[in-house]
Length: 318
Image 1 (cartoon, rainbow, N blue to C red):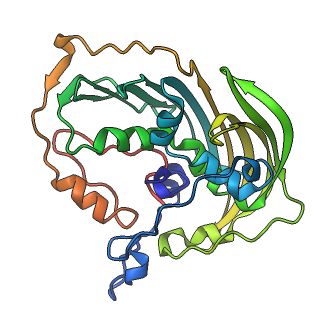
Image 2 (tube, rainbow, N blue to C red; image 1 turned 135 degrees about the horizontal axis):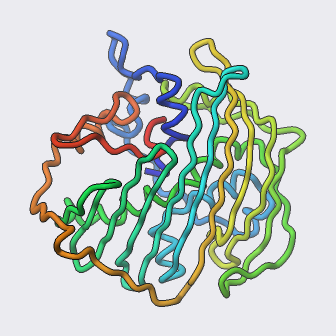
């Protein structure tokens, strides 16, 4: 998903988001997010020049999938950090900070790690046709991918932090081109991000569980990014924002900070598989819970896996 079609699991869990299918009358087809309605065709490529001057196009640049980043740039590392705080009045109802690291080689093998301040984390290695996965403090599990797209999809999901958060404020962003810049040997354009004095309205949300986004008011926004001159891929990005929104008759304030940087572009990345004593071979994984969660995404919490807890990445819940 495009990080994950949401802002953050923190706000979702804190605000006890209601399930979209909670009513007795069923859910309209147009609210099922592509389950019975054909998904839209693939968006056109991001225009680097336009992304340097337009907030929504910059949002599309920040949302470029990691699969495309790897295709265009080859081997590299990406480090992404974020911090979020949600308040109701003066009361902090939730806060979370996290860090994601993605290291990918020229042949597509990779190592990705996610850690957050809630003492949760996950780590993934894709190498030699096998996936190695583990939650924090657990042994590695080795297994083949469920399908050929799984290694790419997992990597895309873990990388998609900046695009998901910026999507919430893109309609209120004023972006200006600040000239040429270079990051990790790549030529780019530096852009300034600030609050538009006359921001557009938040975009309409067809899904019921995302209607709260239509109430978003961006109170503060500042940051900058360096976009690759050829592809508009964000080589560096940072932004901070403060927004208010309404949910179920309550008003909340969300503060967020995000940073992203690519490094070692085109350089060899040394990946090491875990030692055998730390690996439990998992020859096959049941897809029943995965398929259930995919069908009910945004309408029900993830199912618990037997023998462990469900895994949620910030942004999984609308």
